[in-house]
Image (cartoon, rainbow, N blue to C red; front, side, top):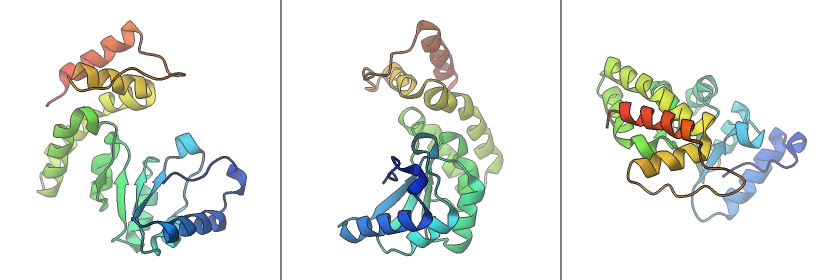
Length: 190
């Protein structure tokens, strides 16, 4: 659940806690917080996350801020709170502090390498996990920060999946951008 972000200056700790608790009270299903400050301008403080973690239906958080220190602060107090990293470039650091896993755009096109990374970490093969993590950094940046949704959709189409056309106001990739993603996909260990 994204934070309301239209009135950013008013979204204090108390406001966020009251809002999320009210939604969780009314929800028939468990809730994951979604911390994505790059798009909302709202970045949950550890104290806010910990206060919300006390609610029985707020069971975790997708953290796209990739702030591993913040996640560690939360998990040090509440190791049962499920934190999922939102970036494929940060899966290994988050797993190393006890994150439950990831909810990542990169998984749409690199699910197998991400799974191998998680398995290598879980079985103590740190060098292999690190090698896989580092091999995914450029591709993850291309489909998230550099080219965004247009890049992800193109990559999915190139892999035989359905990415489909972008919706306005986004534009499809230019030829040189497609060529860059093609090169990154060719190097992907599947």
